[in-house]
Length: 257
Image (spheres, rainbow, N blue to C red):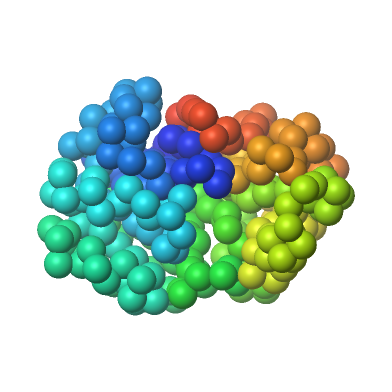
């Protein structure tokens, strides 16, 4: 299994997961031409993608999905709640598949386990991807952790984890009070220390890669995010980094130890 990000942040998100001959793109928050350009930077052409899997309906995650799926003739997987918002695009897509937020499914060689998360969307989910041996956990766009989230993400081999903001920087920012409350609220985004607290509650003995993701340009820095995560790890993984809005992160591969 290997995975790479095309970009991560409020201006657009997409993650590619590859197992064997199968590749799925998780979210597609960039325009058609930009998505193609970012795929090329990872050595991929659009026809290399077998399906798009959507976490929720916010524009930075779903904005380019319909155009990309129509252009290249691929299925889109999403929850029924997300579909209610996406309904105006439904008839224009080659194929739409529904996700049950508690039921695992497979796309080709990739095992996918969705799980529900608290976020200000209709029926948002995040995912654990598997190849029968390794597990890649994805958690962004979540306001608070839950016991179920912890159970899903424990003993992952790789983890892409939201570190959206530093709480102090957010409160000192020029954002309107309502926006500050939304971001910091139970249905908003994880701050650095909330992400670190979640990480501290997991069994990280298998962890090879840890990527801080969905960082705010205005209210966070990579240094603050990574410092918070490493503070709770006795043995940080070699594959420790952060995802950027411009380039995401390059291919990461999971190896059998």
